[in-house]
Image (tube, rainbow, N blue to C red; front, side, top):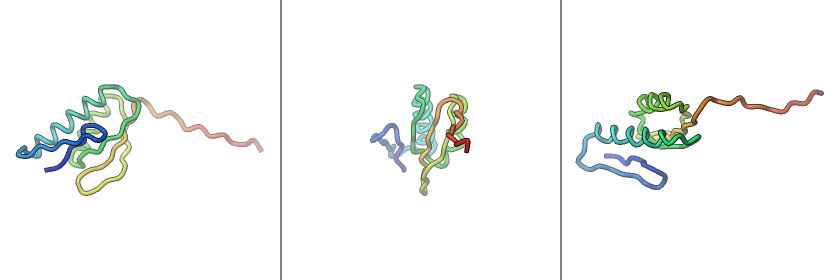
Length: 93
């Protein structure tokens, strides 16, 4: 049994429920959160759910940037919209 991050500082666990239930809850919570249309948000999700998270993110026009990982999960940053080019100032000399 593991904790599922619902929001910053709010984690839930479901004793007596299957791993499938936890995975479904985690992806449902992620889909609901991303549906708010925030430009940038970060979540900790199970590594088992990465592919499904990617599908949800793409369908809602988000890009995923993977961060720190451990045995059970990974921190993922979700960025809404297309990537803007990184502009740099260069000297003409």
